[in-house]
Amino acid sequence: MVSPPWVGLPTDSTMLGHHRFAAAGEKYLRALVEAAGVTPVLLPSLQPPLPAAHWLDRLQGVLLTGAVSNIEPHLYAGPPSWPGNRHDPARDANALSLLHEALARDLPVLAICRGFQELNVALGGSLHPRVHEVPGMSDHREDPDAPVEVQYGPAHDIRLSDGGWLAGWAGASSARVNSVHGQGIDRLAEGLQIEAVAEDGLIEAARSTTHRFVLGVQWHPEWRVADNPFYHSIFHAFGDACRRNSLTADRS
Picture 1 (cartoon, rainbow, N blue to C red):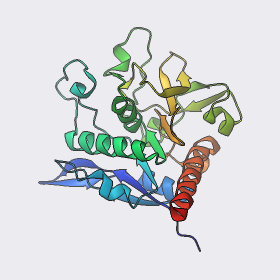
Picture 2 (cartoon, helix red, strand yellow; picture 1 turned 90 degrees about the horizontal axis):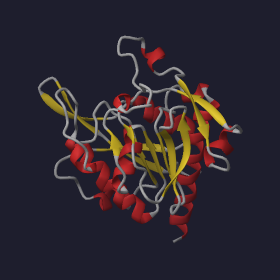
Picture 3 (tube, rainbow, N blue to C red; picture 1 turned 60 degrees about the horizontal axis):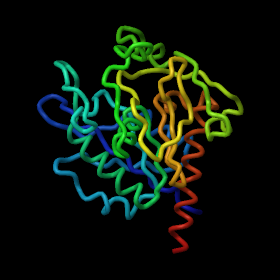
């Protein structure tokens, strides 16, 4: 029996009580196991970052998760931060280091919400620090007082690019997704191709034009992935890419 591929997830560095923990949301781990069919491996975010090469020698893919923190603005030449804006410099450093090494190796990458923003920044793109303050843009944030089922419930439609991966997996030209983010893509990085846009024009998904499987999505397809065929198809395609990479590595 062939063992499932190992997929690494950079963790968030967060305080719990008096101590700092390396953490990752369980919903991402379950989606990897149940929809992608891979084995998740948590990668601790430390400062300075541990050498990414030591991990990626043993991994067949990378998942960049969402998080409660935002990328520090200096990493994309953005405006100064503001009081109360949560940052995680350890996550920034480790995720970007992992991304650069994974892209150089052409490992499969699935990047979700903050992860999509990390992908765009790593490749030289920029972000809107507050999408809701950009003229013409909608408020893509969740209601913090709503039940979690409402926060992660369907929020708006996205238009899927003709001939794109997402349109093919969805079997449609549009889909309805959740929306749980304050930052968003401003200038799309060179080498990324739009896969989906929101009704207000915000880029909701993009893939690399130079790698076998590198996809970023702004919504959260890990949420109740088994109940949503479109969300499930994203993780299944990522798992297939990791399995193909594992077979390639075994033959080399």
